[in-house]
Image (tube, rainbow, N blue to C red; front, side, top):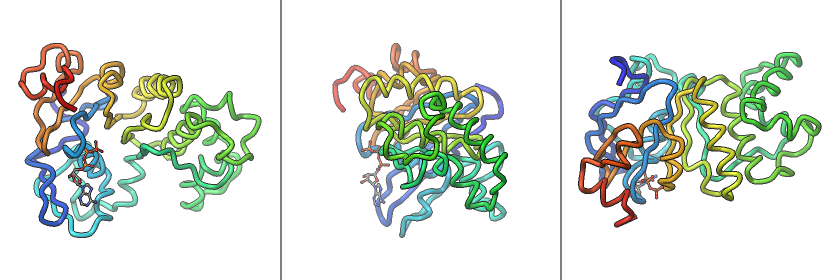
Length: 253
Ligand SMILES: Nc1ncnc2c1ncn2[C@@H]1O[C@H](COP(=O)(O)OP(=O)(O)OP(=O)(O)O)[C@@H](O)[C@H]1O
């Protein structure tokens, strides 16, 4: 583990109202790797992921203790602007969610919001982002057609293109393949492996094979606690905690 992790989760606890769902989580996530969060339903994986770009701020009655740092800076530092944080930390959701717009307009949506309308810049961002999401060759001749005309796997890759158009440093992916067939899933996995050269990726997955295939490191959560966090093959092949072992051997889910 590098001495200075890119994302540091430091004694982080989290509550929805009176219900505590994360307990004193400590986790150091290195740059330009894929880190997977695994664990049974309700163990807090998505909650932790959504705290890395403060998406949970939108929920009423939340409370946290501890801190999360990106590149040494606390997310809760009063000088941090949540909008600029979300530009640095992009997110892709379980259910692909393109906007009812053309492929082109989907990709450059956030640039338009920021008032960047120069055609040559936008054209370049569209091509670069769609290439980055391994979608350019499939859509380059129909950029101005509706995003809804694409297959599910293509729509998810479009959402990845949209997420990387802003050149974030971190890409959070919440079960990005849950709604996809096995072929589309493998494409997204290949894509993630390519993207980690440029981005630090954190993925929540229920699919242990997916974590095994893609993730450099895997964190196993149970009942809101981080049980084990190690290089993926070590965690799967020689789990150190009996709960991790039971989970990765399929004794509970
Ligand atoms: N907005 C919310 N308000 C109240 N409780 C919530 C909210 N979101 C999640 N929870 C609760 O927090 C706990 C952790 O949920 P979370 O979605 O983080 O778990 P998870 O491990 O990602 O689950 P899954 O794998 O099913 O998506 C669960 O008990 C869930 O019911």
